[in-house]
Picture 1 (cartoon, rainbow, N blue to C red):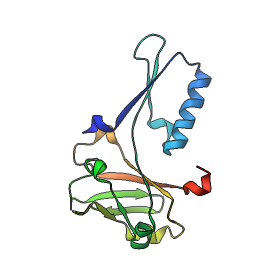
Picture 2 (tube, helix red, strand yellow):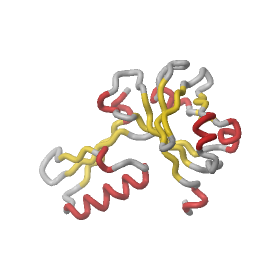
Picture 3 (cartoon, rainbow, N blue to C red):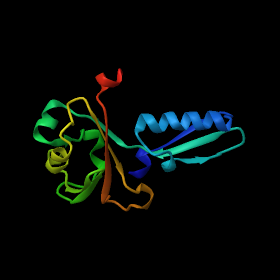
Length: 153
């Protein structure tokens, strides 16, 4: 399961400056700290940047209204089984959560602590330390990126 969400991006011969710019843009797009990337050389004249993909969800009006995140079926195994408790770590604190049988993560307290969240914002969930976790995972970091309309995408 872990391999499904682990990505290797293999580039040609890049200078350190180009590698820095590329990784900065990649980090910005996925809202991930660059220290979470693994940079290595699989063979001569190739550089690989590897990362564990975060789960990105554009929030629908109903999700904001009912203070939950609905996980698409294709990403269901990214999270622990239904009713297994895990933790969401946000800037405001740590929140207990679980996924129900309909793939909903109720986050009432997180939404209450973040009243400016609106439909179109992108919720980004990534395992706290994916390389150290055994299934099921225990904690995710939740960050938010402004709406697509606001960012002009």
